[in-house]
Length: 370
Image 1 (cartoon, one colour):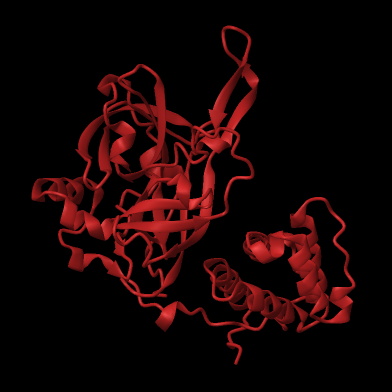
Image 2 (cartoon, helix red, strand yellow):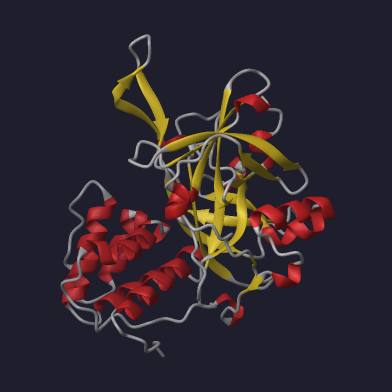
């Protein structure tokens, strides 16, 4: 992957909750990202057929620096599913001093056999919560949506006909409303790779399952937008004037990820340092199924194989397995190799290898496994 260099990447204080009201009078939510002093990118369908006087953007909700402002819709491009909002309400004086005024770097993913790590931050429906301290006029608890910082992978060659990026993410734990997507409200969230904005979340196709999202590609905007629309995005969002000026990425051939040995890692790593690896492991079907996980454990060092799965929840067990492997050098590599036999070169396994590589590099282990 190309290095981020001076690119800042996702800044949580610039993540917007887009609040508006549809033509039917009901509230509508979406996500967005502040790309300039008074400009917010979001998905077109978030603000399509809405009351123009009811559009607001909110930042840092229920935090010390929370602020909300009215916004006008400056651009709605249905073909590309991208919209640009202009903040018309008052902006707190400290916002410009604390948040970068420069536009994000925009990039194009390679049209090759690659799987790339991505992140996005937004406000999906499954993050709906009841506020403990606030009540409505009828006495019922106030409700709000918390943020979701989704990390996952995009398999670049998926969704070629639709022209979108397929984002594989950890699915929500439950889906209690079959007529509504748990990802409703995530639309418009900026999708990042290597510190660069490469797309906007646009849809959750229920037939893809709860762990897949679709995102419009920045590089497709140049085919779908008019010259006037592109000029508007260039002026206010910092989009390059041509696709040739987008950031490009160099990736390992064939979508492969180098494998790094974890044998030399300290045996007392805090949980926060192995959290990414545990997240990636628990998302694998091989690990989430207790039977196949027991089969994996039986195929490695007897010290690890002797561990029984004790917790009703999977995550504490996986933390325990990884921590035990750290105490017996070489067994964590054995564990990943056994899982790989069952998973193959799946998107989930590639994410595990990427987390392992990051963990290895963070502790000065730069040698690839042969």
